[in-house]
Image 1 (cartoon, rainbow, N blue to C red):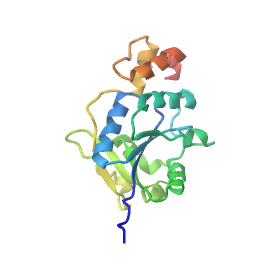
Image 2: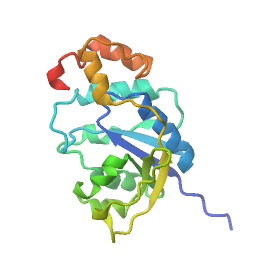
Image 3: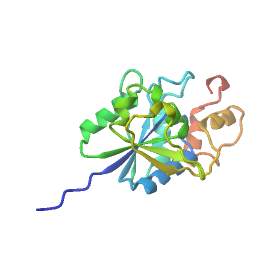
Image 4: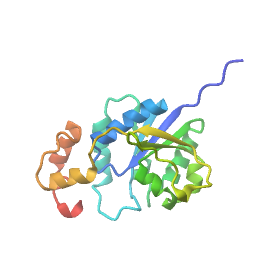
Length: 205
């Protein structure tokens, strides 16, 4: 009898990616190594229901992601949220992907701030039963489960977070102020932002 085939290990990295930047990429590479992933899917949110500000158009955020991860064999863009109407709920994405590839082992990559708010997510109890949580942490810190998740069966793995003080908010602010962002984002993303005039209006940041 042949041995059973190992389940593919697939990470899900969701977010607005407005814009994607070098710290996102560093965390994704860290997750590949820490979780021994076969693939990491970047999932840009179409309509993030917990964000009040106006985002760059979903198609442009996806374009920037394609430029950032192009040529990286285990990174792929997953467009289901920007193609799906209505609010972008992670549970809907996970259910869609599990129906598509039912044999995979799924890891949801989160920051510590996202873990702390996880109990506010749509159908979060169902979500944590379907995925393993991969939580980014800085050296010397250990996320642990927030009180709101106490008593709920959760599988949690820590992913080392590279020491990079970069945020999408700061990048948008620098663009609006006419400052250089070459050290913060991939060169192709910086060129796209400039060519399309993104983030020049500070009211959208």
